[in-house]
Length: 442
Image 1 (tube, one colour):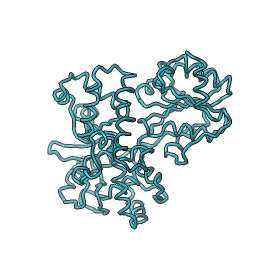
Image 2 (cartoon, one colour):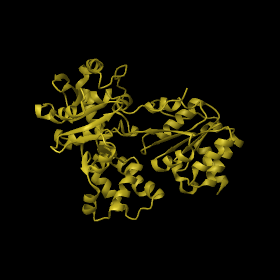
Image 3 (cartoon, helix red, strand yellow):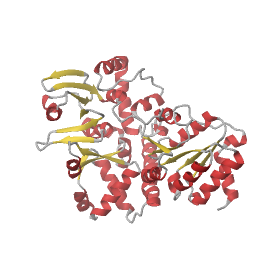
Image 4 (spheres, one colour):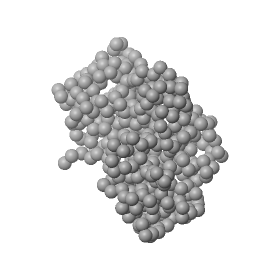
């Protein structure tokens, strides 16, 4: 360990130690306010999520708002990725700079970092805020640091965040998709600029996952940024740094398959045949892609957890923009027919539903009660398009369902219950059906 080199790095990372301002963007992700609520408590904070979504920016914004007593260090360089360096950084922060809040970026590269933090947490008055681009190591750390750490997941930009980054006002007040009057009021506030919102929705699908691409217009730059700085860095560097990967080519091709077939049913046995690989390897590689936030999956909804485990799952790329970049797709290729699966991707939940008659619901949200959501990204919605929603509502005795469309805004009362129709851009602006973020205990 070269201590002089580490001290130089500390100086580079921390302009406030030289009396200079910490430069940060004015725009704040929605997660910022949630994390800030925990800054006055002793618990360590972990911010996890996909590369380039703004974890480091949130940390630096928190540092700037604190003003003093802060220190930042990143473990992105290979020679710093060890316990000795981590211990040196914390000791230097406490005893040389007098920091009370230590920000540790890309902490997942340091083996047993949770053990080091646990020791300082129990013995010193220090607040640690860590970030990571891989979920498994931080999940293990939560067990080791039980009662000492709270974690937050930073997802790709939401559509509302994307619009705000472009300087567009999106109206005041929350509107849940289950609350039709509130959604209708939100629609009326924006109906005069509907064409612009429809255009921006397509732009959001194409490039809107990452803050640094919001104002980028060059498709070649967009594709290369996502391919080189996100996908390839995760697949060829991040994942192999933590897991044993013998076939990086297979890992990449498996992810490319997920991009091309996002929102499709998958079976590991079929993937084994397709890629000429064994079951354990394919299963592990899918797990690694999930741990790195590149893909997600959904289970087929059933009242029985055992039944859910037996049924095929759906696989999703985490954001359509990543799929378009990996597949080399131009904006002009985003036809209405092709976009359906990617609109479903952006609206996906933890569950979907499909019965033996192949009646389907794209998303089933369970937040104390069931809410089925079907995606039909086209202008004309035929009666047969409601078949899956109505079947689900009848089977599970649900009195309301949602149809996400390209342009339809409507409310229909049918014998089986009420169907609410929303344009996709509006549904995303009003979406409040994910599980609530944690809040500090009283």
